[in-house]
Image (cartoon, rainbow, N blue to C red; front, top):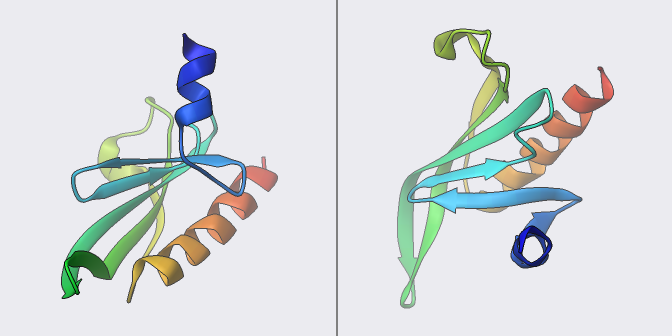
Length: 98
C-alpha cells in the first residue's frame, strides 16, 4: 500500500510536495531540512484562485530544536512559481551541505 501511495504523491525535482489548506510542504521529513510555504494572498484568475503572495521558509526537521529556532531562512515571493523556484534552490543547497 505504501508503494501505491508514493506513486500518487506529487513530486517536484525529486522531492514530495504536500498541501494542507494554505500550507505547502516541500521535501522529505526524514531529511535534515524541509521547506514550508504559506499562501498569504491569492487572487481570482477566471474561476481559479491563484497565489499572489507566498511566504517561504527553510526549516530544520530535528525534533531536538525548539519550533521557533527551526527556521533557517525565510522570504516572501509574489506568486507560487517564484516561491517554488527559491524553495528548490534552498532545499538542494541545505541538503548538499550535510
